[in-house]
Length: 371
Ligand SMILES: [Zn+2]
Image (cartoon, rainbow, N blue to C red):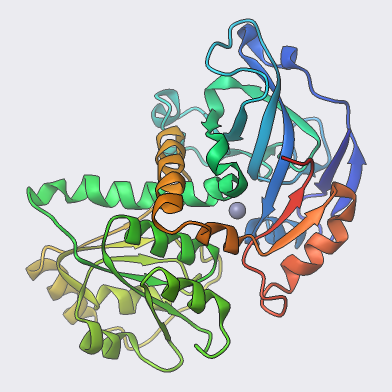
């Protein structure tokens, strides 16, 4: 079968490779599921791996099959798989358990291990292939009514985790009813986050770098009742004067100084969720340290980081995909801006991914097989 691979830690090595078709029997205890891949989304992670920034090949291989945002159809099941049938639509999660106690209880998104096992990213082959086999334990069933948008489930799962952790942590308040939210960053993650907050009936304000004029992502945000402001035109401090302090803030810009501004835009008892992986070594001056510290203390404010997602967050995501179709029918489909048919056209996919802004691309994805 065809697959798309890179040589990790080397620049621009993305290529088509020929692999043996995986088998149900590759997975122990009769729990295997063979999945025919239908769609695989691509994102900054795939771009950065192909740039040689990170990524680890599985043991015994000198290449890594890419792809973590997936949608497939069950082609075959092992004898101990009762929860899926041939023909079911499924999405697989990404991280597999390592050794820490969190991994052992199925909370591998909270691992304390330094080595990750993530399909398409680290030590495990990904989903940019015609088939994959996986344990039924790591698959989530997709209702046919939302299959067209289900390739967005993996990125949405990251947000579901962040938001559910915020609500869980805020149980310290006994009563916490957030009314306003801010989202910093308006790429794929920012759009999905703004949507998730709207589905929870919050007043949502989104902020991105792009000017409002001609910015498609801002059009989409306004369609679901979210305001958009360019950070080039309004400072975070001025946005607070305009909209008030935010009960919950989700930061996903990839630009760490915004996190320090967000700390100062938080309402009393508010919570700031940080999700940007900022690999650089940027330093900033003039952080009002006393002020931020005092606000956090006197206002019982909270800030935490979040990464990855576990099974329950994928399941929450399925419900939110369905709710989104009920509330804003067709909206998520508009995020699927660029379809590339056939794995052999990987050059085209990476071209769009590498020039996402010029292409006005929100989500570029492979259609490996027709739904
Ligand atoms: Zn991704």
